[in-house]
Image (cartoon, rainbow, N blue to C red; front, side, top):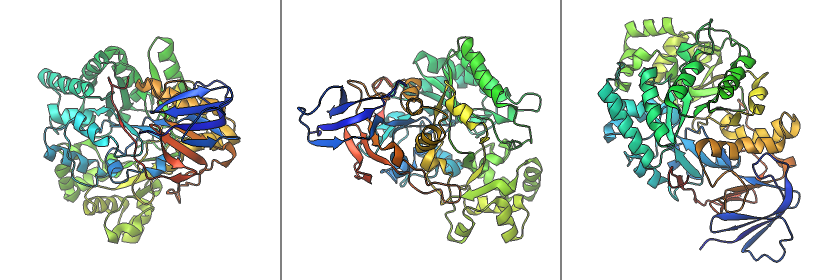
Length: 531
């Protein structure tokens, strides 16, 4: 039987973006009710005095890479200490479902192990329904799933770089439909990650049409290879074309102006107004377009993303063969355009490589007395592809323009493993509170909370999350604005955020008085059931 909880006499910032108001929140049976008048007569099992505290909706992260690792770290401390109560997984075209057999699933996990790592035990699911059932009451937060086009392509076409036939596209559409009927929220692409990167625009439009029939969204990491000195925005224009021709809502993930010359092809970064103008123009023409960004100037992903697509044509075994081939290594080295001094590595599993964690490829190459490319290739072989890297990403001079834009929301793009992950994993959401709203006043606190709660809920289609309103789900946080602090830095990223005193997920305390309770009340959030 669930406990009755009264969060008493706090400043309620309810997720609407409107000014906060003083009142209390009563929780019973995973539903909340807002009390604007005196709450002294209300009986509850637990009463929390929220005087001088803020009560807000729990935060919703629409870009997380924790779909596998969360089963090994179900308390999910890096995220719940930021106030995150719901996450979307299956991002960047890389989802844990669907697969025909365990062999294909395990190969896929292997190929992207530098981005998603491994589950603590061999996966015991293949279908969306099986994965979502595994989530229920086994993790601290709620999990929603979107279907990556990578697994769809493996199912319909295979691992190779070839054009999908009409029959193969129809097969992929059928599988996507089944996944969405089992609870997935749409489909995602990561068009820099093979084999999803092998998909044509036409193929993605057809998948989009299928997702649109069931009310899904298109969540995309765009195709960076399209960018050129003449058109830096070409990757996003392709995304808009897919959205327009499939009549599917578009969500551009990690959307920001890059730092100067961090593009792999040494392309200038353009103007931030060009990026925002592209979204504004699309919306003014009636398109449903949103984006997310994170709050740090550092990127983070698998090291294999730096390798040409042809090295992955056929799967992870083929990639290993290329990395061992002197002929292929020379060809790859010529094609890579990368500042190895700002490519910092992490997630080493071998004890003899642990000393390299947090160092740049350039620094490691000097230690190993190799050129940077060869040092990187050898480490990838030794670590069986599972290396992550942190690099320079968003331009810190313009990032706040994306954060405060009315079409933008906040997401972490979080990777929880490795000794030196991007600090955004530990501080993306709390940084909005402590820096963007409280200290720098780029946005109001009410705007910031909306961008982390109701806006992502509405983008995904969650009908009972994201607001502190009567009859909404009891996913809530309580914090003292003056106490919120983000100690995570690039040099020392694995530091939990401070100041989120209480976190309630599905009517149960996950954090109480700044301490994790160890409870795992999280549920799978299913399309259809939870819309």
